[in-house]
Image (tube, rainbow, N blue to C red; front, side, top):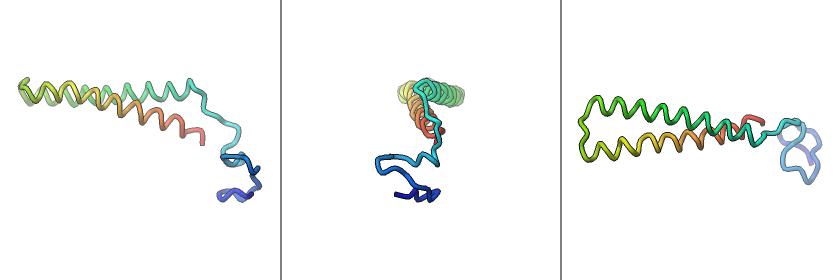
Length: 91
């Protein structure tokens, strides 16, 4: 079987082309570090948005829910993006 990207011969049982991906592999620690980094960035963005929101509005019933949910949502989103990016960087 030939690789569609580089055209070199690939073993039939290979999932990825060994010539295109090389010997680099993502370690679990690298993926975890990527997730932590993404979560920290997401949390910082969420807290910045909450600060701006609270500066412009009083603490009303609806605002309290947004103030709680926004950092949690951005933290989770940052965590997922960080994990995915760390896993894809080795390609």
